[in-house]
Every structure is written in C-alpha cells, then in structure tokens.
Length: 335
Image 1 (spheres, rainbow, N blue to C red):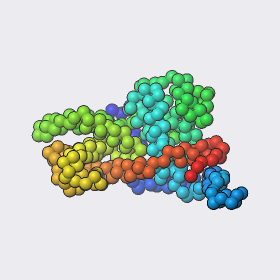
Image 2: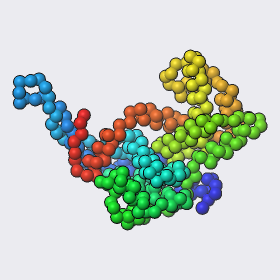
Image 3: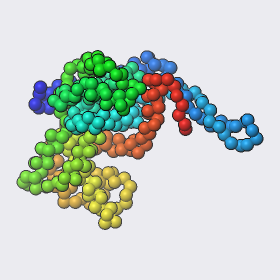
Image 4: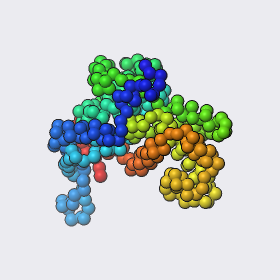
C-alpha cells in the first residue's frame, strides 16, 4: 500500500491525460459498435389517431423504436444520464448499509475504471454496483457481510441481483482482473483537510465555516460522476471544489444584496465580474503561492459546471427503462 499519491499505483497506472483517456474510450466505442451493431430495440406507448369512432381523440398504442449503437444512450463516457444514475445506485446501497463515504467514493472509482474497458451492455450494472461496493468496503477496512449486502441490494433491485451471494464473489474476480488488482485509491478529502489547516496559518488566517466545508465535501462527492478523478490529482480536485464553494458564497452575498443577477452564477464567480470578497482574495493568494497547476484547477471547475448543466436535464425514468429493456424483456413506457 502506498501512503503517498505520488508513488501510488493510482498515479502510475490509473491516471490519464485527456488524450489518453479519449483513446481508451475510443477503443471501447469501436468494440461496442462491433459487438452490438443492431443497437437496442425498445417498445414505447405512442399516441395514434383513434379511428374506431368519430371522435378526434387519440389512443396509446405500442410502437417499436430502434436506438442506434452510435447514439449516446448507455455509453458511460457520453451519457450523463447513465453516469448520474450509477452515482445514485452506489449512494442508495451505501446509505442502506451506513457505509462510510470514503468507501463509496472508492466504489465510484472502481466502477469508472471498469466501465472504461467494459460496456454496460456486456454486464449487469446492478450486480457491478453491488460488487464494487463489496470490494471497496474490504479495501477501505469497513467490510460488509456478503449475505447482508446481497440482501439489501435485492431489496432495491430484485429483478437484477441474484439471491446467490457467490454471484458477487464470481463477479469480484472479474472486477479485480479489469482493475489489474490496483485497488488503493487516494481521494480529495484528505487534501481538503490539509488545505483548510494551511489556510488557518499565517499569512492567510482564513477560517472556513462548517457549512463551507460541508458544501465543498458535497462538491467532491459529485466530482466522482465526472472524469476528474481519472485525470487530475486529488489535491487539484479539492482545491477546485473549495474555489467553487468560496466563489459561490461571494455570489450569494451579492445576490442577497441585490448586486447581481441570478443567472450563470459560477461563471460570474470565476470572472470576478461582481468583485471579490476578502475570503476569495485570500484563497486566490493561497492558490498563487501554492504553485498548483491553475489550468488543471480551471479544467476541473469546468468539469463540475458541465456536470450540473447535464444534471438539470437528468431523466431517471428514461435510463431505468433502457436498462430494464436491455437486461430483461421489452416493456412499454409512456411518452
């Protein structure tokens, strides 16, 4: 086990550049197009003219539609609906078992790494989620009884998680193989604590409130939906989330005073259009003196902004319907 990110297998084996990550995903994209050229046929209820009487009303009739393999749906790298849904699956199972957030974050990383090389169409996503949580809990030293874990998973997704616990252990070997047995993950939570402690010292003397830290922690949790943890070091993500927290706090104060509009708040915060608070100035000074790669910080912030843009359009029933159609038999959904 590596105590430092800089000498860890995470940095040397599972850290990508944007270019290398795109190449990995292109390989999977080509493989999916070869394995599933037919795409996915779904059955939906669509309105059709009612010719059985003289009224002008419509009736709902089943209609078959094909979703081409080239469409973004069910491609983890392109489908934010699927990314957010996976995030909620892990969180939902974790809350049922009161699992520590650090272990759930590790499970998110395992899932992201696994789906970098394997298509959602090839595996049972719900069994994958169950297995990543099971393995992450062992690695993070908060192990769960496998029968308890499977029982809770079945209570959430009875159609997809088999009652036999050995199915999870079998899938665990498959997961370990794809992860190449590199299981130690360094998260942004510890760098966040170190940054906060440093900010309390001279010459910064910046004390953040408990609400600020909670908001920053939530932003870090959300960052696991993005590619940030596959590309950037943990301290970059921590600093980016802290920057957003402080910037939005400044904007909220201006909104409360009627000094700015409510639209594009993060963009306004980044541009400093409405002026900077003392807290923002001090934190900017800290970033300048810490000599971090500011371009990486800005890229990570942009990843978060893009995520929340997609989150506004999140449609859980649609992605659930697609997965049910993929894994079970076609059913109907209303427009």
